Image 1: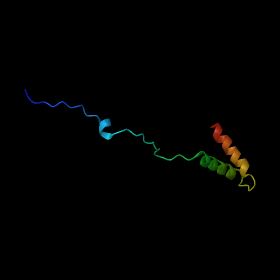
Image 2: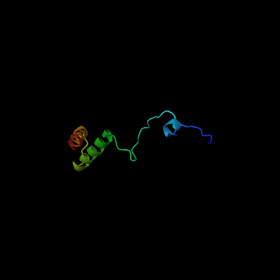
Image 3: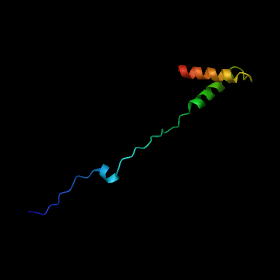
Image 4: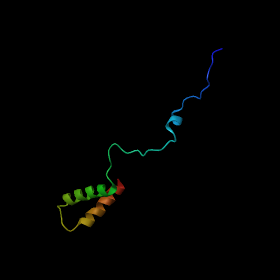
Amino acid sequence: MPNRIKTKPFSSANAEGPRTRRKRTPAIALPSSHDQIAIEAYAIWETSGRPADRALEHWLEAEQRLASS
């Protein structure tokens, strides 16, 4: 009878050591909510004739629009 050596089946988990979780990063970075609000507020500002004294009003309106969408 041939001489046979018993071995454990190969497991990639054993070969790599302890598993660690990697954070998944999106392929395209999404803008933060602050950036989205700023972009929307800028659009509102432009469509309302670019007034100099209504920045807060435009910001709040942009927040409201994005919250409802």
